[in-house]
Length: 148
Image 1 (tube, rainbow, N blue to C red):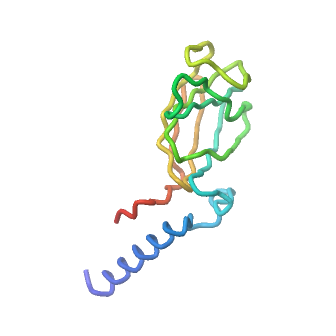
Image 2 (cartoon, one colour; image 1 turned 120 degrees about the vertical axis):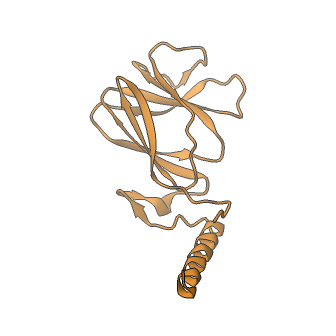
């Protein structure tokens, strides 16, 4: 590796660090989503499903709280929404319900349960099928801890 390559790598690292301090997502747009519209501690989830389902979540900070409806999804339509990344949460995907709140004990119609690890300014794809749920990262979040 020559001095020019090292200098370029160091400069890129420096720019990334400064962006993270300024809460800069690094890009304006990703797959049609306006990344610059996200606020601090927010990310996008894009969902695709082969059936009508409802996505619920509960924060790890909440003891004995019910799951709260985040988004109702229709079969065959891509949907997206903004999620809070400041605290970990548990998600559940249910079929045949659109209630605002669901008890922790209620597993009727439960298709899957997830504990996504979401980061600021990330974009995540949730795929829901009859066989279950899968979540993957389509845009990496900003590393607010400035790891090299």
